[in-house]
Length: 144
Image (cartoon, rainbow, N blue to C red; front, top):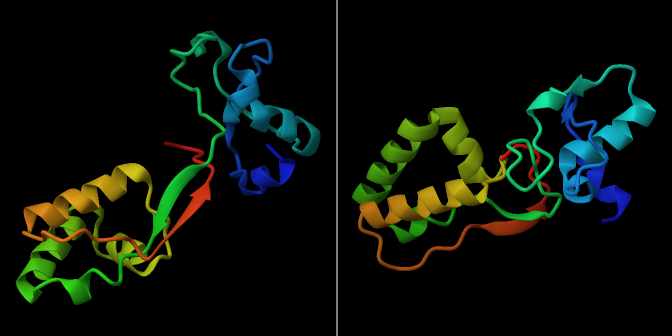
């Protein structure tokens, strides 16, 4: 993957020092280690004794971009008022008011797990037609 893909490297991202791990070439913690070793004075290191150096490693994060959704402002126009009110209540109960509106207007990327949650809530409130998010984009998933 081109180096430009890692411009979103979070500050103080935990790194792994096991460059001999078979998963190292695709693991964000190892890739971040190589980048931060050159640029940073201090590193936040994952305890080396906790890494398993195989596919079962709890700290492994794939460097493959994920498909995120951005915004769902069009949902309200396609729902009955009572459906939307209930939809919003459930989502606000899950994330809180401000985070709900950040997701709704597209200020916050929506990962696949939250996309599934939103689509499930649509079914719960009785929406039968298929809804699409405002837009989709690929981004690196640093934490999930």
